[in-house]
Length: 584
Image (cartoon, rainbow, N blue to C red; front, side):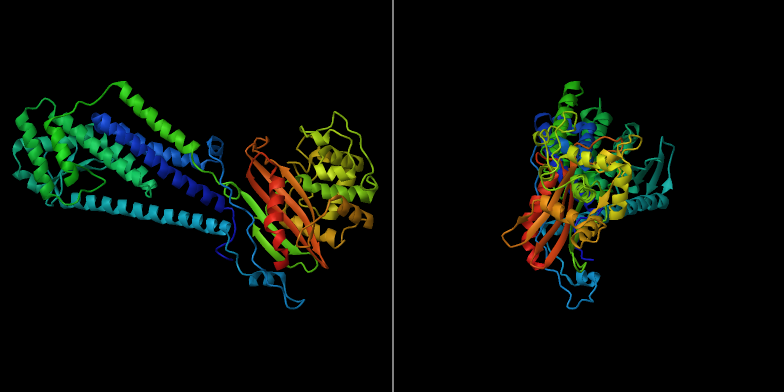
């Protein structure tokens, strides 16, 4: 099977995951811009842990909401239409009549189409994400082991609210352990002034009292889940920065200038002695050369934290606006990106050679108005229908019209097919009766053969083929159409002839004559209601030229638009597939 196969059951998820990934990066840019403005105009915002963690949560929320299919309704940008029907690659024909269809398909070169390239790219990104997530988790486990190894190599010191361990390693004093907090103190801390040692230990214990380990762990988890988003790392670093500033403020509160100076000197000395800080621990010296000067300046001249509600309200409103914008302004792919079902299938009617089969052609869906082909065959075979214009059935206001003006008129077989008039088909099936309808469907071998209708509603005669019990796949449509073309159904010759005539065949510029029927219907939700956001679009039939006939079945499930899904499916087929029939 080619790696450039069209959409399978995994591909809609992969495509939506790719959209969510891009959307959360865009949301990250918005969050970072908002926080940059806050830092510029409200410097004290840097000391607020909640701002940075909420920033991360906003990005994660954007990612998760975009993953939800219902979020499609929130966007305001038009959908990006990626054509479902790419130019098919020429299929190899059998040299002899003994060549099997499977062999013929195997010999056909894979078509590199925009759809297949998109499918390959999105599935590749899903795989890359999984690998990146695995690598990130491995790195966290290695860090955890390193911290535990350091703790195991040290020895316990005097009593403290948390376990204190002195280690002979060039590290910063640090607090780690979400469930069993431990404080690691390097031996070189003994060379520091007593006041400096006391303030450094107090700094780490302040982290413990403020529950900073829990805050830091949440930030690390969120960053790990969206490891590919650079703004998650930036925000998590700012969260650590805010935690350090908060502890500095609490430790130095009310202390004289001499102790503040000593505290800053200890910070500089520690930075010179330590190795690279460990990301999963809260460390006194968790600074870099680029941030050291700023932190010392804040230590010497502290900025009062803004504790009033308006700062937080304004920040929350700004983050909420970023989240709303990321949903409303994100691009959405029309079919097939939004599709959960897509199939293009063509077969040589005489030999059964499969010329093309892309997508989920084995998946069943409601036949919708494509069932009118079946109703026409039954109607002409039983004598209910006479010719193209007989009988004319009078319109009755009690008939279902669904606001179709073309359904509110007296209708004959020709206009019935042209306008897909549901009530005309219902009149034919009602005159056949439940036994007659079931008998024909069984003899035709049509789909799942279930014309019982909605459970408990006893509407099989009038509704079974409309979002109800009767289901058929594109593969089964192809098999049924071959029986029509090859006249293998137990019906009269007149039924074949008249059905073909009322399908309103059209001849294309390349000489192929198309006999086709569209169908449009909404999927049914688990609660039994209609899905107002999506539509099935069918186009099935056969194409003839010279002595050759090709049967086809196309099915799409995509986002509801102003025009009918069946119409869009037909137009895409006629534009991009039917023009290439000579190459099959």
